[in-house]
Length: 321
Image 1 (spheres, rainbow, N blue to C red):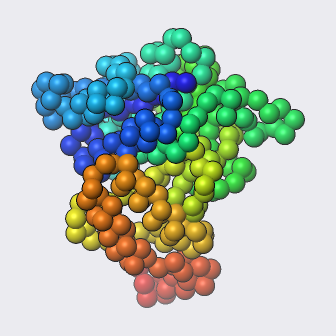
Image 2: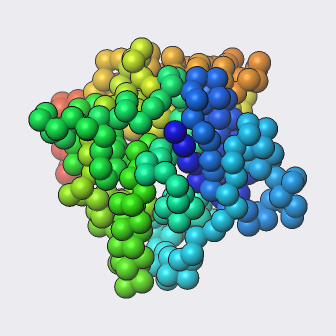
């Protein structure tokens, strides 16, 4: 089964994303038989010669089939994502190319009916085959999804209406129609109704068509440790790969420490796995030390009902911001 990644060289000089991709590729090679492919948009962001680009070198090292391509809707995309709008949503222009390159997959893949798409911040822990993906949308019709098979954005259940697009089982014929709709929308200046970028468009375009697959294919560390997890997505908070990185209070982390009793153990377990799959002997110590500082900076009760009431009252009375 083919697995596609899609990114541009805007991440080439970002150490955290570089090492996450190393761990992604290494875990895929060690634990799966997936046929790895990557759409790569080389824009000479950091180097002039692609042979000197460290992401390109990484792809070659792991024998990934590289498809050098770029989005064919740049003009329309930038007419929607103006400089003012990008500043408003806190997104860099260069990162748009990595975000939206996934819409080009069905243009590149012309052979297989189904492919797997994966973000570059995941760990593959078990081998994966097409028959493993069985839709959960219907108890009567357990079959491979006919549109896109996806998992929950944040909640570990199957009642969700918003999906995470970091892992998608894609029916390529269906996905061509998804792109067609997307192109029509941005040509008319339409922004995504929900989230600001590619995932927002995908959720809106596919809102009546997406099919739920088991969350083990897009497991989040804050859901806790799961021995059945096939793909773990380092979602929300990324491992810190620089020594001495100071931790800080992060509402997202505190919320999930409050909501999920196993969140802390999950982060430590999967961040340790990530560090191991980087193949860098120093990485485990660095990542876990930084994670410890971050965990110590959190307040697991920050989102409790009582604390929310006190914060709201404080804001009304002008006592707190």
